[in-house]
Length: 68
Image (cartoon, rainbow, N blue to C red; front, top):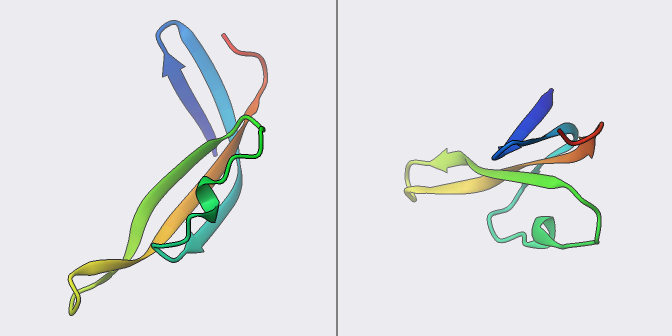
């Protein structure tokens, strides 16, 4: 799915290129490599006994097309 990020008058479109599940303590998903990208992270796998999330869902998107 396309992702639209609006910053004032500028619109940037992104295309999802990767979806992963990771452990909550996996910080590799935050590593910078110089490429422009959008990384969305949310909690997943709620553990009722421990009252905490056991995983993270990570969606990575790269810019596509011209910026408006």
